[in-house]
Image (cartoon, rainbow, N blue to C red; front, side, top):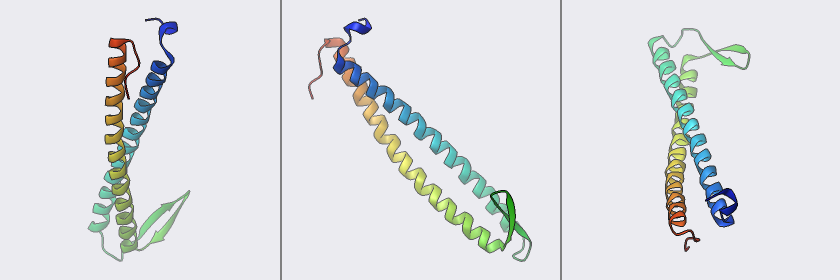
Length: 121
């Protein structure tokens, strides 16, 4: 089937399929970034727990370092971890929905190619 022979409805389904795949790749990249952040937070938390509460700790803010209390830094890191875990959960749900959508689109496209007519909706 040449490009001229591809009906508009099938081109639309193929475009939706490709867009869904791009969206899935973006979500997977975001999930990977969050996993890296959580890993960094866990390493930083472990190091902070090794030092005493009165030891000097600096927080990187923009292009400067600010002196902070160890316990405040631990609290900030825990909040960040909770936010990242929530984001990760949301992205996992989006990933599941997109995978289901892609599977359905792929089935419709395959059926349409076999029958060469629009799928019934």
